[in-house]
Length: 235
Ligand SMILES: NC(=O)c1ccc[n+]([C@@H]2O[C@H](COP(=O)([O-])OP(=O)(O)OC[C@H]3O[C@@H](n4cnc5c(N)ncnc54)[C@H](OP(=O)(O)O)[C@@H]3O)[C@@H](O)[C@H]2O)c1
Image (cartoon, rainbow, N blue to C red; front, side):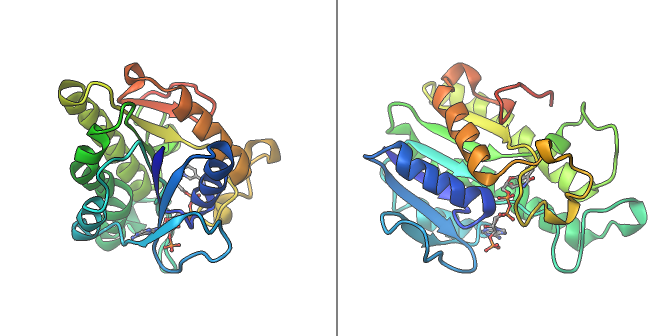
């Protein structure tokens, strides 16, 4: 089983790598990092340095895979050192909005474009991207977080669109949008104050939930939006 995790050094990404290594003894696990290669994870992971906002970097990595069974994209941004998610219109800025789109939405499109040929060789090709419930237009009752919400809504549309194309040309494929739940990582840390303890999950628990969900998923699930616990979410 050949698996590629984008963002293997992130909070959820690291736990996914560790869980995959213990779940599947015969796994050929590849993972990407952005800034620093993790030295404390298993020696059996093949690491690739990739800035996923660059199509050429994704294309170059894809050219190294002749077959791929599972791709999981865990890369995402909610805040930067200079900008947090917007509470209201006056704090919305072009650069921050475009950065959210460039990190949270566009890479999944480019991954689908460049990894389709290696996924097609697999008997059970699966592709999952971590989205967020706040990207659901129907579920949006609080407003705010303009850039993050919009980028995850765009991501969800991409997942749906890709699933329609792949159903025609790659009917065994399953592409999923997954909400991991509020997870204790660097991404959510500044916003955890009002989260009840029982609703704040550890990355290890979330990784286990996500991998169980992906394991159960069939081509009939393709193009759908699921929470970590298997509940289907509205677009
Ligand atoms: N944590 C939550 O509560 C929560 C809730 C809902 C949805 N999600 C989603 O779950 C996913 C994983 O989140 P997380 O909590 O694990 O976040 P995290 O710990 O902040 O990890 C995010 C990862 O993305 C990488 N990254 C950022 N920009 C990149 C770029 N240009 N190229 C390559 N890698 C880049 C980061 O690498 P560097 O640090 O090296 O830049 C980091 O490894 C995200 O899509 C997030 O939106 C999380």
